[in-house]
Length: 303
Image 1: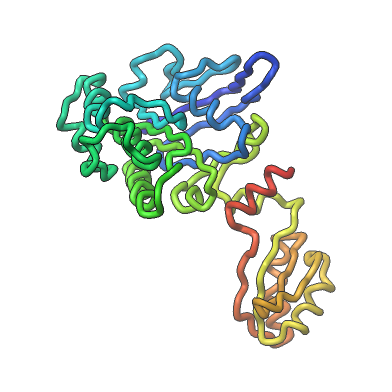
Image 2: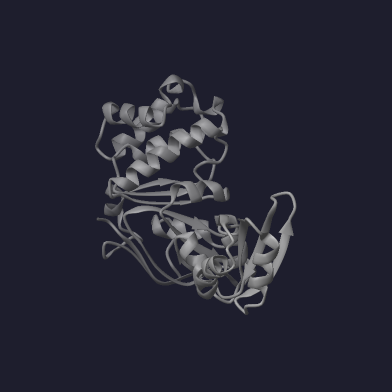
């Protein structure tokens, strides 16, 4: 069970603070790293990978410092966001070269290429690859030594839907095997589908940690929105709006439903079935309308 620990980590470039006093542990399973452009995600991943030294604080892998400690690369696989590669090499030559750096050979390289479905193009030069193919061969090079930790910076860029689904399955399997996988993505739906845990960074600071639903529910100072269909929407709305736990109700004609804004999440979840029972109203649908990861992320960025 390998864990990366960041303890009061900061990183600045001249007068620009990219990461500001972040403390977080990244352990087994798949963790999604979220934040707007310029939030400090790439800087964090580069410090976890040992590419950058923290200006303050420490980054460790199971207690061992990552910076200037080449032994950690036996455990870590890295897929950087940057595009720079050796375009004159074939995909197979590139992955074999990375295998040899770990004292491995062609067999391990072939296994990694098969894992990311790049066997068909392995003898073509990287300079002829599409962006999605370049991403996959980078993934193969990161997986060639079967690492216990995988760090990926925007790994799905340029991939078509089928390629994304295949690599999402690879990440899920690695997480299920007890490996530590952390990836950043600007496509929030991908994170929601793959990650069992999220870390949110906004303006270089740690904004939230957990799964997106638990984070949403912790934000008690913000209203929760529900889509509700019932046998008598008018009577239900009249009964609910009288209670202080309900701060607003709208009629969604397109959905033929009520959109209810709850100011007190706990009280509302108890009130709704009670009111329906007392008034003889049948509830057909009760679903949160703002619990997508995108909604949570928007709230956190705006906070």
